[in-house]
Image 1 (tube, protein in one colour):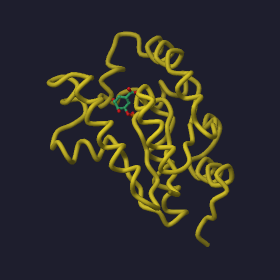
Image 2 (tube, protein in one colour):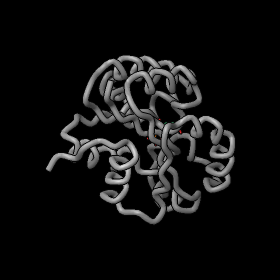
Image 3 (cartoon, protein in one colour):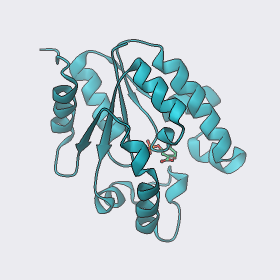
Length: 171
Ligand code: S3P
């Protein structure tokens, strides 16, 4: 399979970069969270608050499994998807796994004022970002390639993904 799956912490730009990347490659862009929301007809925040995080993780896993069997897609996975190593295996089965990273302060700036991420609705979101990141580092390290997005534009990051995965952008 020839997909590109983008993983990484919330706010590292997986969705924004993924859209541009898909356009450059002539691939279809698929956001796992968005697909879960479409399928369930409710928001991720609603699923977390009404059905719990573990139920969300089941939906996320099923969605990743079905998407990984497709071809020519750029997948943007939620920041916690890598916590289940089966998701990592599925995405690798489907293609190349690229991790986007950014400094916690950059992430805070990007996600501030956005209430769609239930895990960051806490009094000290920066501390929460640092804590979650530290605990997830070992999982993000499973990616085939890692790109620090901190000082880069969306287009530059997408071009960098193409360079490291050695795909050809459409002219
Ligand atoms: C999560 C990240 C979110 C979403 C959910 C949980 C996480 O996706 O899946 O809120 O555990 O890091 P994004 O990384 O696209 O924000």
